[in-house]
Image 1 (cartoon, helix red, strand yellow):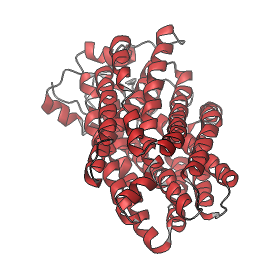
Image 2 (cartoon, helix red, strand yellow):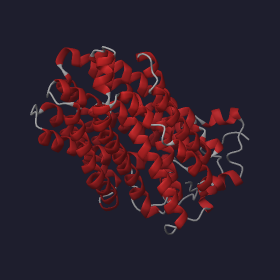
Image 3 (cartoon, one colour):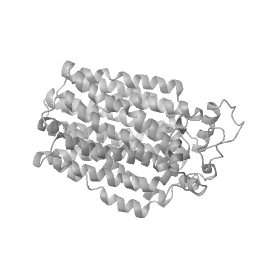
Image 4 (cartoon, one colour):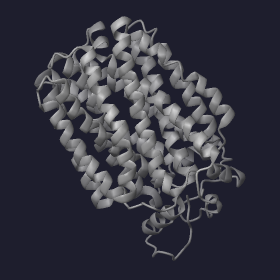
Length: 450
């Protein structure tokens, strides 16, 4: 079976899938599993920020070298493209199980690193599965849950990610005072127990199951490789480019924020490990309690486009203030960091919503992986290295401040080019975008896809 082009693809099987009208007991249980996986995901990602000063000192790394370590680790998120794309062939359930096991295993192995090279290698491998797990959780939310719940579900995952970061920093406050950084990574093995729960309690998504029943997932490996090009066909090209660009604008400030701030706080503000962990944990508590709920509320009331632009403008302004206000006060820094985290969570929530809503079911994981986990992470990889190189010359604050231009550009792109998807089913979104891409008037050809 060849890979159909934009004009010969049959009506998507997911058009015949009934949209869930309300939350069922299974959907609530599934949400609990996804939330748990996301909490541990964020916990493990945040460990790198909690131990950054210790690792930099242990291996005698300057800012440029630390930026290079971050670059290599973050490339793992790009490599997750290949893991995530498998979900369009084998399904969401088996691949998310693999990702949970993978990130727990390699996080635990990091505790046994003998030098900076093995440390970087294990963290690189862990990041592959961490990025893929979060992406799949978002995709499952988009495919399984009622239309009105999608924005809330995505913002809830972002909020629980913040909760995972809080746990990481609060745990680090005690662990680093009594043990060492290796203990933090050993704690990253805990999510292994989730593998059993997912295998026993999770079903394949309804939309993917319908595609499988219609034979859309029964592709040869050659056909699967050919399908990787589909997001760049005329039908999907504009939306692929948009999501890629705004993710890159977003990552220019979110990628260096906490990791470089902890170093900035330790060296320039003379904060202890306990001080900066309190600041970050406090900020993420605010993000968890305020930022994530607000993101879902704004997406449903103001719409995706305006909410995204406002959060991007806010992220630019507050990251600049966080690094450029040299007041060594835990209270002041917590206030500024809290504002940053609220904007980051909001920006990530809306951008993630766009990334999952703008592609049909048959290429949703592939489209997401291209735009979010591959091309969308260029600045996430390059920015820490660039900041590290600049920091050795002009200092960390000004280096990060320069990057604040990124979200400003992203906000302008969203206001000009992003579609409004509030209140629409995935099928309606796909139909409208397809008609716009192919120059059709609304309703001229009903070829809706989810």
